[in-house]
Each structure stands twice: as structure tokens, then as C-alpha cells.
Length: 394
Image (cartoon, rainbow, N blue to C red; front, side, top):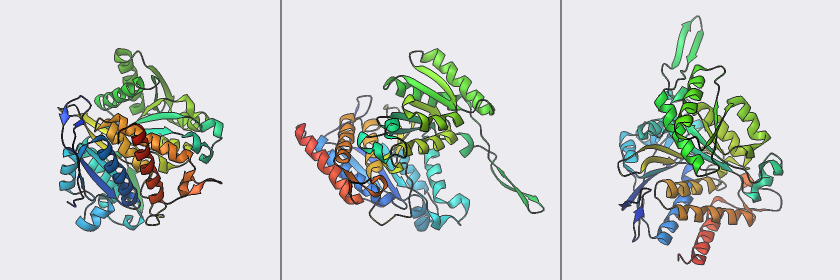
């Protein structure tokens, strides 16, 4: 494993059930494309937060995706997977790129990420989508449509068509072939992610929109029935509505502010969350958390990553937006490290920087100041430190 310097300052980290745990362990996986660039900046913010709040965190680094394939001949080594499962949180950059498109399908970078998710059993993908007021003009939709919208998409992550068997490409003879992917869900897979969505809604506006295709898919019908049953038995205080996936895609661009928490399966969640991200002005703005089952100490297996992908066309140019990676660190601080105040400090700092007019290329609008990846991170760090002093944390 490649080692990076360890952040180690006096103090204890409280996990979410209040038990002391020290030191916490984070595994960082920069990956491919812009992944190493944005994760480096996110690490700087994490180091700063550790000093401000007196957190003791051991941070190590390893390879995944194409970077792992080039070094080890596989996109995810068994040792990396073992270390990831032992960590309190894993923070990922991005995987993939055109240079690996022609290698065996099982060795492609994306397979490493799927292997990691499966091993960590991270079944609930939380993808917040929100629009900072200062970025409303960056959206392709009208400002009044997107300004102030704030939703959470809860996507099932380890089931459905991406993992179903049988799968593959069959030779039918006479030059014909058949591609097969199987979409299925079982009751337990649906209930565990639905519980996450209902619990999340209780911390927000207590509204869940469950999205499926129950009109044409038996797996979708089962999804709707099981979510409805769970709602009736345990979450009557939360408003539950249902919507077909195609209608939801339309409604997201018509009136995104109608949604609070969207609950959906792996395939639809993948598509809808990317669509929702563009309402914010750029896919480079949004983080994600993937949560697994609870451990005996109350913590969960957890993987955090920006949703923007590896963007190989801009890698190495110093223009990538680091905010999604920085906000992924904020999510890790809230959900895995038990320091929600630190997470909010980061979010407030990001909002302050954006309201001051700084923009990376992806969110650039006339009259704003175009800055590099590093300068944007510098500005966030400066704001974090300034606000910490104002709050007498430094």
C-alpha cells in the first residue's frame, strides 16, 4: 500500500452512537483522471479540519481503477478491498478513462469500483442535489426554477440490473449476438434502503417520493408494494408518494423543488441523480455517500465520492472543480466521523466562496472570477480558517 502522511493531533472522534473511538481510519483512493487532483485538495481541507477540531485520524492511500490495473494488473486488489472494509470511511476520487476501453471487460476500472461497493456492502447511495443561490444562473434551467432547491436522492446500490445474474453476451451464430442483463430485487434489499430514505426524510421535510416502473416491470411492482407496506407499518409520520421513473425525469426539470427525498433503485438512481446534478449548474459540485450495514459499534461501512467521474479530457490541466470532493469529505465527517459541526463549517465556507464570485471553468458565468483547482481549494481553506476563528475554534 502507498502510505501518505498521517494526520495526528490530540483529541477523540465520537462516532454516531457516542462511543469514543480513536484514532479513526480513512482510506483515500484517488483513482484516475481528475481523481488525484480533486482528492489532494479534499485532503488539505480534511487536514485543516483535524487541526481545528482536534481530531485524530490516520489517513492512508491506495490505488483503484485504471491506476491499479497499470500497477497490479487488476482494478481492485484483495489487499485494497480488505483495507477498505477495515476503514471507518473510504474517500474515492474517480475511476475510468478511454485508455482502458479496449481491455477485458472484467478488468476495466469501473469493475474495481463495483467490486469495492459489493465488498463493503454499501447498499444505500445518498446523493444530495442542491443549488447555491449564487449558482442559480449557472444552471441551464430558469433561475426561478432551480434557485433554492434541495433534495436527497437515496439510490439502492448493490442490487438490480447492475449485479443481476445471468448476464453477458451470447453468440447466437450466423453473426448474431444477444446481450443479457437481469434485473431483480428481493424484499430485504428493498426494505433496508427504504428505511434509510424514511429515516433521512425525518431529518428533512418528511416527504419521500418512491420512484419505479411498476407499470411495466414486476421488480418495480414488488418495489412499490414493499415500500408501501414498510411505510404503513413503521413510517406513517412521513409522507410517501410514488412516481414512475420517466415522469420523475420530466418533473426534475419542470419543478425540482417539489422533491425532498427520492427513493429509487440502482439503475434509475444512477440516471436521475446525474440529471439532478446538472440542475445545480455542474456535476462537479455534488458529493455522495454510500452506506452499508451497521457495525457492532454503531458505525456503518461507508464510501464517499464526488459524482462527477474521472473527466479525462481535463485531467492534468488544473481546471477541475474540487468542490464535490471537498463536500464528500464533509459528508464523511457527518456520517462516519460524527462531527456534523465540521461538516457544516465546510459547507458554509464553500457557499461563502461561491457568493464571492470565484468560479472554476465548469461553473463560470460572465462577471465572475475564473480560478484553478488549487485556487478554489485555497479559497475554501481560507474561509474555513476564517470562520473557525470567528467561532473561536482556533
